[in-house]
Amino acid sequence: MGRQGVRSEPLVLSAEERETLARWARRPTSAQALALRCRIVLACSEPGSNVEIGRRLGVSDDTVRKWRSRFAERRLDGLHDEPRPGKPRTISDGDVERVIVKTLESKPKNATHWSTRSMAEATGMTQTAVSRIWRAFGLKPHLVDTFKLSPDPMFIDKVHDIVALYLNPPDAAVVLCVDEKTQVQALDRTAPIFPMIPGTPERQTHDYRRNGTTNLYAALNVASGNVITAMTERHRATEFIKFLNVIDAEIPDHLDVHLVVDNVSTHKTPTVQRWLLRHPRVTFHFTPTYSSWLNLVERWFAELTNKWLRRNTHRSVRALNASIRTWVADWNDNPRPFIWHKTADQILDSLASYCRRIDDSGH
Image 1 (tube, rainbow, N blue to C red):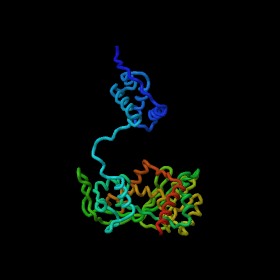
Image 2: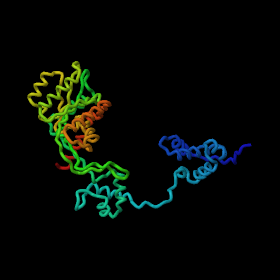
Image 3: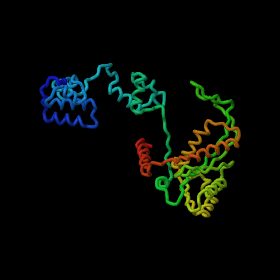
Image 4: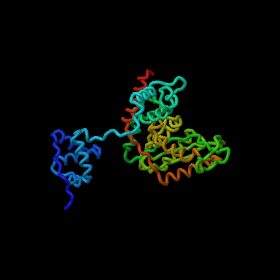
């Protein structure tokens, strides 16, 4: 005969206790341990031994006995975990608030921003404690971001225009983001580069030799990620028109062409205007002043710079041009479009918050 154990008297629950236990047992946000304890107490309110209840719920009879006894003594409060033993907390909520307020609302006398050392001296706390508080609240006094608000009177209209091209491109048309990366330098270090070894990063001299410059024109296809490029010795409207001819030749004749460009003077000369009149399928969409971040080709230029140019060496402009062509060809073998996510309204709301902060600061 199986072990059944001695039947205990069922626990007597009030209607409110029963309702609370049932709610905690099935609530998704309850800790699993608390939910199990609630199910044990509910089972103990029905006839049955601790062994039978434990077998039904998958726990030992000692566990059932423990929570039956705890609930009988302390009711619902007895189901929660008791404070664990350990070193008492040494940093109070007041200490935390004091560090946060001092970080956000004051500066040290001899510096533009707080360090963990200076804050520790000012508050009488350890550097470790200050660092832990800053990390918990995302405070980084040593970092500073920059921003520039556009004075363009057509800013809102231009943002809506360009973002609409990204999120809802027109039918039977190609959207290209066009810009120039001017004065790309062919640089060579003054000593050989030492490769990375375990425990030591790659090493190169801080100074370099200049071996000339090139100008890179690029047109990023927003839909496919493919890039059309050209490199020139000079940066004038003449070179820009030659690049427009390259774009015109690359795009099938039955498609309209929408070009996102910035406000540089070489994009607005009379010769460029006459070229546009001769090519009615091409439309320029100008980014607002100081708003090159709206032009997706800038993101592609960042990829080229960070992954290829910054740590590379080139002993001549010819070598630099060949190196860039190699990287572009590799990119176009597996192009990766950059996906625009924010709507125009979201961008404008974000900028409005900056404007409000500027107004509130009294500037």
